[in-house]
Image 1 (tube, rainbow over the protein chains, first blue to last red):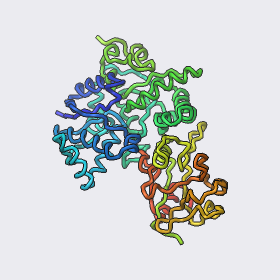
Image 2 (cartoon, rainbow over the protein chains, first blue to last red):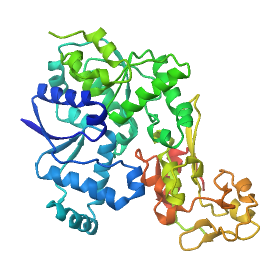
Image 3 (cartoon, helix red, strand yellow):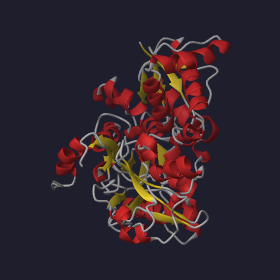
Image 4 (cartoon, chains in turn purple, yellow):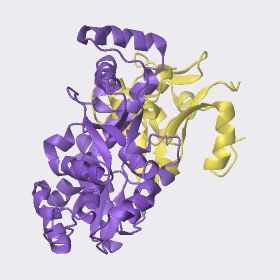
Length: 290
Length: 156
């Protein structure tokens, strides 16, 4: 039986418990066991925290990785930012002097990082460890929905070209029974970091053109593998509506779309916590399961 | 004299998501603020076409900013070939701002001095925090080879 240690990060338990629930439902359906990482902390943020305090940031990441090592399975990361942070920490901790310095800090907590945990992104796990047939077998409620995919910047920290990384989410969306809407701005950032620095600029140069392109493509929904992008794409639609925009597209985490297609009821997934019309859309399309 | 080991930034638009993290990292490293208006490089995005580019310093061999500086505030660090500004010598005339064909130097009004890329003393933060590796640090030798692939032409 496949077994993964789940790393939820902050945004999912705090803001999108529906994604956590979907993860548990989807992996159970696929016959994989999910193990919780007790005592984990923020990853932390891959850019801002590291900029402000590199050593503290690395120690937090190393602590999370050391906790995962004790459980002896692959670490399944459900958030793009967490994935990049942990992968970069792993790279930095390959330096023996750095590792010794950080381990001296972890020793106070009875922990040690040795470098044996394998950090894996959700989309990689779903495409590398499960054959398309295994996912297809579980599709009990296929809905012909046209979906625009947004992969997200932090998922692109990889030897693969960004265009190939983007294709992974698109292929997964197709494997889950959907039609992918090509909108031409797949690579564009959701605008979350730029909003921290300059909200108006982010909306004008990034988010509005991206969502306009999605709308023009005929997509009925948006999917992403990143909870922060999900938050950003939803909350900016709310802001844009106040400025007169008529864009009102439901945004789903890919795990939520998978759970729906696997036959789970939109009524019990917690979709009402979305700021986009995700629940209304899911209920209209998938209905209430028996 | 050209130094083939000189470190340079190279930008690949096909990898850029226009997230602006490079500018944020730059402004934080140099001024301890997250302010993309205070970055020493600029992400340029055309909202209509989605086309993007990054205006970054090339630390040119014949640097226009250095030549234009009337006080010698702009100088080349001979060990690293980095073109730098000495703020104590800068009189704020903005000649470098006008001279640079890429538009890299900018005037910091509060300090009364011009600012430009200094490659973060050898560890450029823009490249370090670029998730898709659209900005990378390479040496001049590799720059020539890669520019032909990315830029479609030769800079020889």
